View 1 (cartoon, helix red, strand yellow):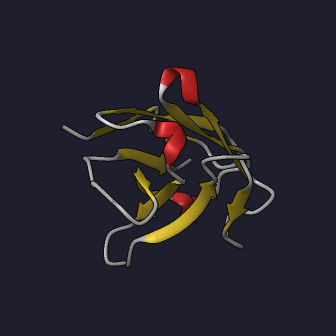
View 2 (tube, rainbow, N blue to C red):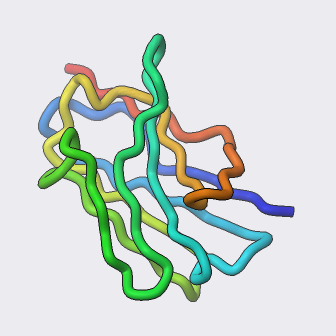
View 3 (cartoon, one colour):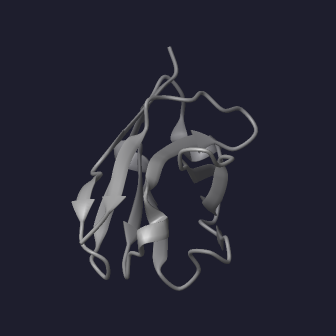
Length: 114
């Protein structure tokens, strides 16, 4: 069974940082591009970042470029999202997934509030 479990969310002040983790099982992580997404209430799901399967090339949406960093550890079947300089508008549920073959999990809640 393909499973993706996100963790690391929580409550953080504006300007603060969080590191999200994505633990994957049921497939070989190194064979897939992996992305991070988020969805806030009343808004469409937004793609944030992607890391390639072979050479770890990365992509970032303009909304998070320069603030978020994606990385992967294939030996541990894990992908990470380091989030710095968080803003109120970053509040959302964050998901990781395989690009093109998504299996949506529960996500992890990130709340940015003073």
